[in-house]
Figure (cartoon, helix red, strand yellow):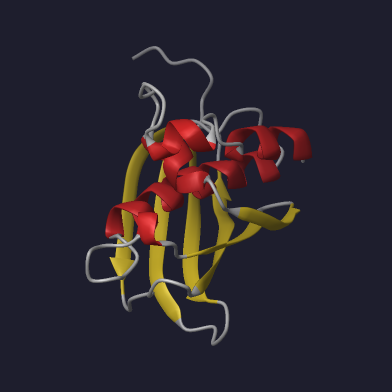
Length: 154
């Protein structure tokens, strides 16, 4: 496992000023917007545990965590699990699916656990569970399938 690669893959590439719009927009805006505030709590072989608090910028007008934020985190944190597993690349996404089973309101702390399900020669699969930290109740479950081969004849 390369802890530095995990950290780099989750490090926001925008400043708070860029995220809030007080400076010219970046080309890569959405990922840093979502990753800002995510804390890595544990990183071990095949597993990544993170947490964040649902803030107004991540919420819908009704006050609940946006589904797009959840999908982006499934993408970003799922990709980071491959680095936790000792792979040199996080690959290219083949499929991402997210099932939403509950809502999270502004102020709730969410725990996100990514687990490596399989890493073969060319394809890897990760599951990403989103739970309310206080109760452990599942709010969403993601599955991220990635093409891992460094080179291809395609």
